[in-house]
Image 1: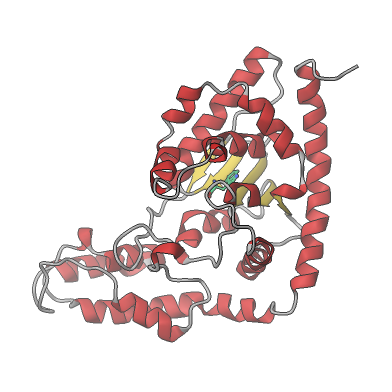
Image 2 (image 1 turned 45 degrees about the horizontal axis):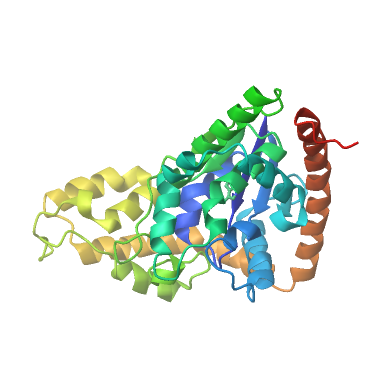
Length: 324
Ligand code: TRP
């Protein structure tokens, strides 16, 4: 079975990326044939500022390497390095009725987020481009965070439409969703670099401690001995994500007024600091390996192009687009 996933190079990775998608990528590394893509064109749908793009691409690749993604055993590449993505995107655009896009809730949220700056035409095609990413490699498994599920569903519909209208070229992809629900940012809102509420993977121990202390807990729990509601506590969300084994006992201690928020957060900082320590070490050891990493991405691009060119030839043939 072939597996593909991607991520937009929008800057430093945070623990939300890890819990949402990357942990699934890592756990699936020994099975399947794998494609991991840096989705630079997708990044342009919400910002046409490309000044940091080359740097962000390399930083993301280094982060992936530090996490343990093996660039020789998986095909890791940059989307814009494989022009076939643009061709298939254009063709899929002709098979995608507008209402399908209008009812994609994740796309709707992105358009609403862009309200002040103004959403562009390219953003409307975001899921269509994502469908092309998946289809080009005939991927059947797509490990992503839950927010991506609507895009994968839309991709399935587009591929079904293609197979039905022309001939059976594309398998229908399955989303592989991570089981950990989305981690909130330190202020309780969605974790995002731009909201300044993210805990980055390479955060120093001091910063981890400082940020964990900011986590929003049950507002009704004022004193350490007050009973609290862990269901509305971000610290407990983090606890469940990073140390599930003793999260239930923290849950009952909190409800019984035996666990104060400060002590809980101190414990959580320790967990997170030791959880992220190996990453920080490996990431530091990769400093200076930018050129080598770039070469690995170029090699990955070559392998990806071969697979993409083959699929594209089939798609053109199915669509009677081989002229003469
Ligand atoms: N939209 C994905 C995200 O924001 C990134 C992405 C682009 C992707 N193309 C993909 C994910 C193809 C899976 C498959 O996280």
